[in-house]
Image (cartoon, rainbow, N blue to C red; front, top):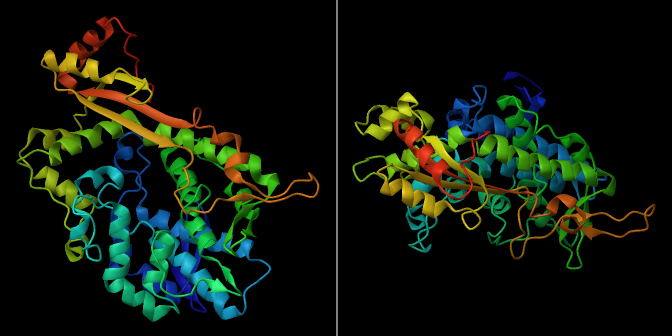
Length: 437
């Protein structure tokens, strides 16, 4: 972090080069829950396949904040707001939502979400369905609204933590008209900058993850995409994100790159195996590892905390994780459990006394819109004689059959691998596929 100049600070970043922020934003950046993200690896166990992938949720979150501010400036380059105070409020609120969108992540990012407690035990969610499990998104909202972070936001800005939370969670009810200006509701567009098929989260992690893993699949021209962002207004005066038609093919590349990153990085067999092993350890009846719903305790739950816990465990599976005695792939096929004969193969291995664990990873290059979520529009073109159309209807990469990644695998302990592979190869169905990932 460089020295301040006129209350402007700067973070040197390997992706975006220079990320400026001011003294008000620094108060949020310095909060312990935001600093905690330095101790959470962005890609979980991926560093064991890609040694450079040790970057943190903190660097990613700062990158998302930076891109959100830049895109805000492009979309509102004509300064359409009723006054400059509104402009500053909205820009700050978007940047804070971008910075804090991942503040609730647990150790190794997504790897331990299955072990999170019941949602109703989280502060702020006491009336939630007792059968529903908390996820990192709910931890994010709870931290945002129920800790001293909310006070810091209220002291530094002309809006509340609830306004920030409403952009992170678009289903959250806003009690006032903060996002209204000149009769237009700007919340849909602001939410799309934080979470949508063209959000700043994906824009940062694709290029950041690509850089630190050393692969080329995520190298997308996000500058071109963001420089062609705009806005459009629906009939009910809701303002939504728009994209100029000339950037449509770049958006296709954006989606296809995400699809390839799923296949080649996010679903890599080694990191997936470690996630399977970690789940086996935590679900062992004698395991003492728990993720607390008490937020004061959660502040110290990070990668190092889990590492120390695993090293101190006497369970054999914990020792395997620590010593990197990683389960091997006895069977792999690209497809969902419905498309792949996973169950019968698993049963055969079990009957042969082999400790087998199944895993199916599923990811789409795009997200289906939830009820009430606004679409992104491809803007009209006088040259082509076309009006505004929904982006999902325009992009060829929205072909679900082609750009949905699913990989099903059966993992076995290393000492049982050779026998398991012979059994799989001897089956009358297609022979075992050697993993290329």
